[in-house]
Every structure is written in C-alpha cells, then in structure tokens.
Image (cartoon, rainbow, N blue to C red):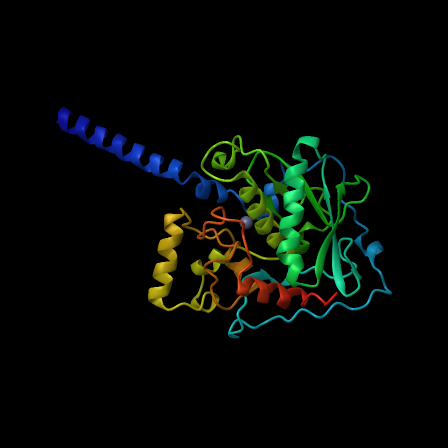
Length: 305
Ligand SMILES: [Zn+2]
C-alpha cells in the first residue's frame, strides 16, 4: 500500500502545483477579487477621529434640482447595469452640491505623497474621460484631505487590493476608497518594468472601476449568481458567461442576496469595467454603452457646456 499512497501523494502534490501555477499565472484576476465593497473592509483603514455627524449642515437650499434618478423595475428592459438604488448621491448629502446642473461630489487624497503624483493624475484623467464625460456628475477638489471636514470620497493609496464603499455608504467615513499605485505586493504584474502589464493602464482601469463603485455601481458579474431577472440571459448565454467568470477565478458573488435585491439592473453587460469576468487591464477601461446608459439613469445626462 505504501508505494500506492506515495504515488497518490505525489499526484496530489503535482495537482496542487498545477492549480497554484494556474492561479499565479492569473494572479491579476485572483487579486482583484480582494476588492470587496463591504464596509467591514475599512475597519483596518479607519483613522483615529470620528466621522462628521452633521451631514445636514452641507445642504445647499438654493441649489437647483438635479434631474431625478429614474429607477427601473426589475422587469424593465432598458439597458441598465447594476447599481445600488439607495446609495445615489444627491445635493446636500456628504458634501455634494449642484453647480450648473452638475452634481459635484468632493474628493480628496489622504496623505498624498510626491512620488504618487502621476498615479493621482491618471486617476483624475480616468474619471474625467469616463463617468464625468457622460453623466451630470463631477468629482471636485482632488487636493489633500482636510481632517476636519469628513465629506465626499476620501482616497488612501496603499499597496493592497483597491476597494471603495458603494455610493453614499461613503458618507461620513474617514476612508472611503483605497487605490494602489505601487503593485509591489498586490497585482505585481502591474508593477512598472514587470513586462506583463502596463502600469498606467492598471492605474487608469482601477480608477474607472473604483469610481464606478463610488457612484453607486455594484459588480456587474454579481448578478449572474442571482435570479434570471437579474441577468436576463438564457441558459446557454448564462453558461457562456459563467465559463468566462470561472476562467477569471470568479466563482461567487461579492454581494449578498439581500444587497442584490436592493439594486437595479436589466441586461447583463459582459464588457463593463465593473465586471470581474472581463479583463479590465488589457487596455484602458472604457464605459460600454450600457455603463453610459446606466450612469445617465442614475444621475442624468451631462448638460451641454
Ligand atoms: Zn470592485
């Protein structure tokens, strides 16, 4: 029995090496799965000090009304990606104001470092090229965070899995988004000189993804794991979509069924930058027509200048 067992052990060890090898080869996709929107993820990021409890003090009563968000029923077929209904920013919430018909959401960097200037610039460009280009929203400020004014989106840069609170879950939180510009210990394929991924493409695409969360988007692939009403795919198309997810090591949703019930979504968007089952690092992430329709549904179209 001994040799058989040894052979079996050897076989299992070889299998384990194969699995680990495949995982390392696809490390990017595995790592990106660290990016979870749950608030608990922020516990170890929280700084000393309490969040502002006086959000109502930010209300701008004279501000013109923002176009009302149109919330679709689950059965409606308008192309809409997946977003959290109750997490949309409005004027007066978390420091957001309306100016010239555009909802402005403050954003700042926590302890910005000089060596990250390029990363911050690419992040700014990514948000302007995508979400701000089509919808009546703008992220404003982009300076160093004021420890006395806890509002809007507050970004920390660190060498860990990027993540963001979803929409107004950020309100009152001292740290609401984590971005990575170094890639020395997380997604090392994005490290400059690795020869595997373009650093600036990684930074850009991650910014598009995380600011999608900041606006209220959930992960597009999550809906594949819930009822057919949430993905609107027939059995064959669902199987194909799931196969793509498994190739990218996505085998479970990152939101709960209860959270899924609080989202709006119609057709599945296989190429959205909010979708883990699509390689967002292959090139600079672009919004799909469904992403564009979705963010317009959420915040209205960008007014003509
Ligand atoms: Zn995400």
